[in-house]
Image (cartoon, rainbow, N blue to C red; front, side):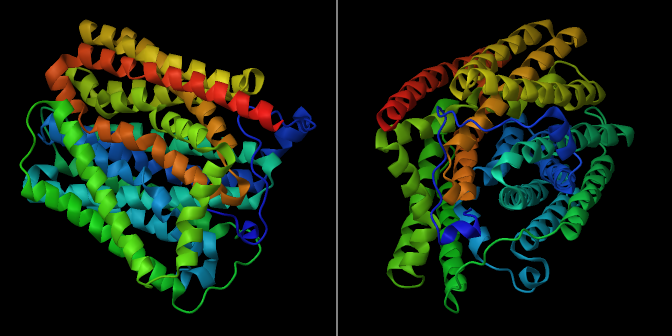
Length: 529
């Protein structure tokens, strides 16, 4: 989303990943003093609210479904409910531009959408809690729909919080705010991961004795925990920004109508494919290709309908262009087509090794005989703390070594540590080895994530910061999460050791892309320097 002040005056582009913009460094006393700023505390609480929903779709839900007797292949398909995070760039400009009736006048543009998104998250979690996936296909379908709603609302909350963070403080304070947000996000993940597992186990649910009421109460507690974010939204101040240029009466509604028609076209083609064509046999690879074609046709239908309606005059061409086209054109103009495509390929593939493995990791731990309590302690609590340590390490080395070098070593570690799971697959229930594997995996993931966030931030233009960042953060999970939906089928075909070796090999092309991108950016810097 473009900060309002940038709508009329074009701000300069960011210096880029290889630039070295030097500013006087504040003293340690001045840095520590900023930690007590009310804005830092507000980002800590908002980060908690943003981190809470993710594992309720991506991790804890998989254990619930396994205990309910849902087959492993169907469990991994539920990871697609989190694809809302991968497509948030499509509606991010609408969140930035369209006012909400009554709420915007009461709370302001950013807080209105934050509150709407948080209430939507609560509704989705309560809906999931009210649905027993073991009650039959209809209940399983309802669970999937609530999970999709949770992904959509949670992704919307992320969009708004990113824009809010950018607008409440100058660039030199963004590092502290981002650190507070990430810390809160990790705490939210611990609550939704370890907390949900502890509660479900405490109230009597286990793989051998499934209790729906235990999971229901655990998810209701998670919905109640969203009150932290809602209270923060009501208490914080709306950013003081320049007002946007007023649009003609009805322009917002027409733009929203175009978006909704495009969404209906996407859903129609995606759903129609599943109804008209039988499931594809021939293994996970052929299934992945079929689903890739299904996704491509659905997106093409959505784009075609949206573009057609704009050409027919349902919405202003200038408004549609400024909303969806200009942020993309700006990126290609600044870097050139060849470098831009290379950077987008790197963004889309960088996290593939750890995300594809992460979809089935909890099922793997259970198959190795680890209890929910052991998983909660090792993965959801200890592992998250280790990932925070890795994040600080990655941020420090990104400052000392440079973004591209840290990006390379992060990719090496993220792929190499997947091989530790091979050893665990052969060892079985070995708690010491499990902690060693979790330590290495989360330390590498935290390191790689910190380096990657620094890289993504350096690619954005401050005139289109939120929209371009939404594009990058959406793209980085799109292919990995789509491929992760087939991880259950891959395990069935390859076994756990073969699957983990495959995820490690997925990281090899990423190393080549990092090297090529670094070289291209150095050449571009020399030409423009």
